[in-house]
Image (cartoon, rainbow, N blue to C red; front, side, top):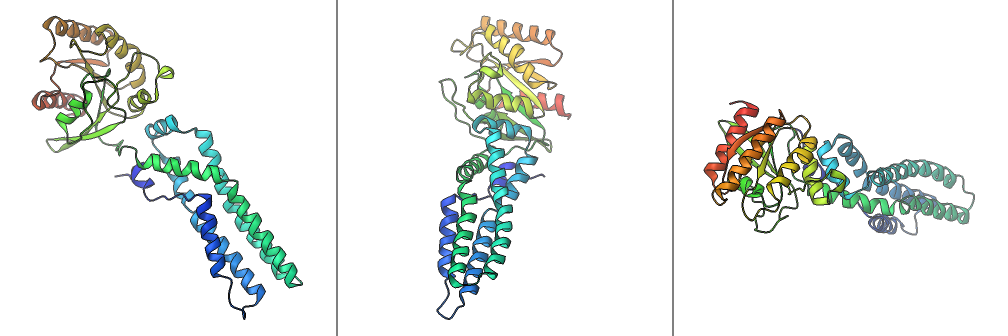
Length: 341
């Protein structure tokens, strides 16, 4: 199985400029040498030590570049909610250039030190070398902090395997998405009576007949285009747009529904279907145990109409997400239809 971004990012440490400065200062103090040490040998050793520290402590940039270059579009969509992609690119470029210039300056000043004709000239060249090399990283101080925040952010992203069969659970706020995921897996997304409880992507796993399926809990979304969505909704849009698999859309016909059935139908037809592209959308009417009979009939009618209007929509009936038996029955039906028995 290919390593996932959160797992890879856990091995990456991005130092701050102050960390680099402190580590260099400590090593230079250690490298002062005794009275018997020749001035030239001492300064060359200190320059070498500085070069080695700066290169080794910024070696993280190689792993970070590989991670960013290979990152799945889903993860990039989540990253771009919090970070400007151009700012990330500039920060990476700054550190990469600083490393190249460090080696060039090391070679240049090493030659100048060897050519120094007096202790005074040697000391002057050594000071200049240290100052110019450190200035390379000082220019990157903001970029280093940005990259540190980026790595911490990636470490906290949900571990999703894009090669595994996946069902993305979507719908309006408070429609029962988190309850469904809790019923069919060991994942424990927060469930509450108020809307927009789910603010992050949560991942559960369901196993049946030797097959394991990822079940993705997404934040609630409203019936509007992606440019008008808030940061929480855009996380759901990222999953719907970029993760492969099938979508389970929950309609909420209960009296406490956050949105009217008309708006929920518009949400599915006008927002979700354009986002999912070629994925199949399975529609279930949730909260069948607590919804008025007339509302259930109206929801079923809306689902059938959506099915008739779009060949990628499949209506699969009523459901009670809080019931494990009911939730598993719906999920098993999707798995059989979408991924085979």
